[in-house]
Image 1 (cartoon, chains in turn brown, orange):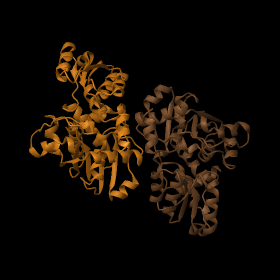
Image 2 (cartoon, one colour):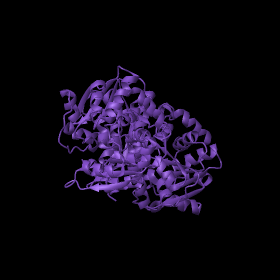
Image 3 (cartoon, chains in turn green, yellow):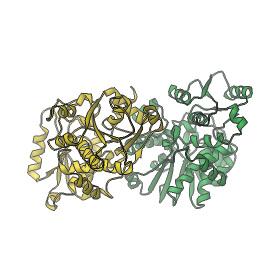
Image 4 (cartoon, rainbow over the protein chains, first blue to last red):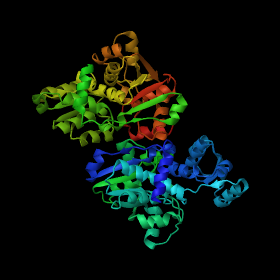
Length: 314
Length: 314
């Protein structure tokens, strides 16, 4: 998988942004450590998902590309598949739930994708998707359980370590585990002594439970504010990589996530979505002790205005 | 003045941040031009004011430094004088109006400055300041009408042009004119063909009026959302420099400022205060036509949470 990350990096050149690494003097003083933030909120479509989608879709066969792709997502994966398809001249269909915020519908449609809305009360997403997929021969682009997607996400950590080579610890948010699995492989491949810690909300701790049980544990859909981590279980491809390359999985409270988003906004002047703020939340709330050089991956910055307002009000 | 900007740049080395320059593909496509943003919202204390304050206070005589400094401001200048004084081991007293938001009082006090609050209904700021100044022999650090402050602010444009040398136009927000005057001198000193345009809110257009009348025009205090530009008149030191080095002054509406702050937040994922968003506001509302390579100075990112919430609600 490490070699596939290197290959993905070449493939992404000229398409993905090399996102900046930011620091904060006051945070470092506050924590007594050196913290570096890899800012995927500045990635195209506002999140790391562009990398995996590009690495996956650009490797489809000509026939597959001609037929088109399909994905289900109400979030960053939808926009990633839509934009990548547009860049590569491929038809994209995105299945989105009926409660998707208008801004996300507009953004996805803005990239030229066809949107199919399903009723979350009466319809099953997988059945809706399979029906359309079979009818048109579209290739399904999975959000995390796909080796090309995982390799693409791994380029985040590889790029990060190229810029800041001597990190002691790397904190990575965890939803379905694509970013965490890819980043752990990349980080350990570059430096086997780096400590890789996955962070998830206390309210959606399926990865922690799975990690401890040694098998994939599925939990009910969580209503954590970190909407990017509401997946109910790791994938059968992400879980073994996480078992092998990740050192620990820690959780963080909703309040800590809110505090972290506010710190980014008001102190560091950057917009980070709640899922993207998990690493800082863990440091601020001391669920991970900051020591030495700590790398934190900010996964994205796509936050709905009402959620942002709610956070600012607390 | 150009040489003083070069000197200021050396003085600031290791103290001020070299702030990043950001771009947005979707904005460039939308405007049909190449727009570069110099991000002083990432400067220490969250605004360019750190530069002028440092360049000024660090040049005081030993005796003056021993006595201490005083400033009046409810905004970024207060925090700049407080932080610079702390870094240089100088006592700072800041005179702030009684309606200053708590966050700004806390931030200024957090840098170790002594705060004196005056009642805006019953007391005159200048009299309060003069009284304390005379009693203790403090040196007054003016927010813009001071050549060292102007030279310090000019380093923003100099640094910007070092990174993006071939800008056709430079847009600079204008309040008291320190940033605009310094940046215009720096820009024309580097490249006399660059077009320098000052931007102010329609509701606080004293600089435009002064520029057209050929003399300093004073207006009543404005309630524009761009609180950093509520100064009622240019200074006798900033005005002649603006007359000589600035090509044009344009205004922009309140709605355009709000739209620009929202674009920064939701599309570019950065927090910009309303005064800092004037350049983008002028471009988005077409009060300045975007052509070729356009440089835009973002002056700062210190926005009160209630104002941010208000903007997100519109």
